[in-house]
Image 1 (tube, rainbow, N blue to C red):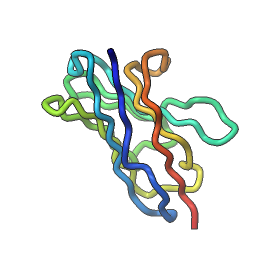
Image 2 (tube, rainbow, N blue to C red):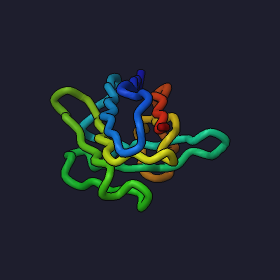
Image 3 (tube, rainbow, N blue to C red):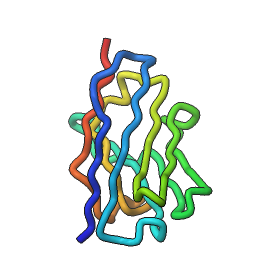
Image 4 (spheres, one colour):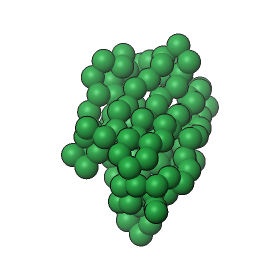
Length: 117
């Protein structure tokens, strides 16, 4: 069955960096567009970034463009999100999703990111 396991979250000060990873299994990873989404406390699920199956074409929400980078290693069935210049408003649980912006596909259990001084 489809499994998505996120890791790499933690606490960081504003301006800091984190790299999230998502290990995928149970499906042909390279065939699927993959996304990162996040849910801040008290808010709905928000699409953050996505990338085509071949890893060539990334896309980003305006709120994270030029600060976050999504990439993937299809040989390792792993999706990544490099987050730089983190802001307190980036605080959320981050999810790996097998889907595009609609976020209707399977997702992992999430990894928590807290940005605070």
